[in-house]
Amino acid sequence: MSEMLKIGVLASGRGSNFQSIIDNIESGFIPAEIAVLISDKADAFAIERAKKHKIESLVINLKNFSNKDLFYAHIADELQKRGVELVVLAGFMRVVGKPLIERYNNKIMNIHPALLPSFPGLHGQKQAVDYGVKISGCTVHFVDEGVDTGPIIMQAAVPVYEDDTEDTLSERILKQEHRIFPLAIKLYAEGKITLTGGKVCIKSGRENGILINPPA
Image (cartoon, rainbow, N blue to C red; front, side, top):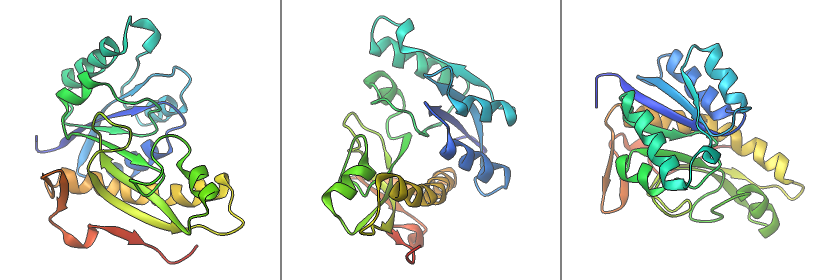
């Protein structure tokens, strides 16, 4: 990695996690720079956030490609042109394709609103409420070719209350997403994350494992 880690962010929507990463970079907490934001949606609010912070943004629409492999190969091309070393999925609402994964193997980081391996895929918060679990949370993980099956980097747990809805639980989980996603990126930028035998090890052991906060 270069002295200052170069990050490429992929986002499809409002980009609240993208904003959290920006804020933590600008505060000096994350020793990195965002080289580019790529969105598959021209109306994604994440693009407005990028403009406000003078970050280059690109819109790459799947409809302009004959197949998904070409779409993801083009995204990989654009990331590599800008020297991106870590790809961060901040609300990118697609399963990442093989051409991008192959070029950034174990260098794509995602946050999922559930304690993986429970409740992968869409609507993890709703699944948690529907199943009546007592603890939910969020997971930062590396991306592989499965759906939310990659090596787990960090997790944060939150309580699930009897009167919770998908929206109220989502709000509580999102606060923890904004906390542990920047922390995981910081540790990666500092070279403190290693992957051995499909498991992630963090040199600074206090950040490893599940982080449980007092009930909100």
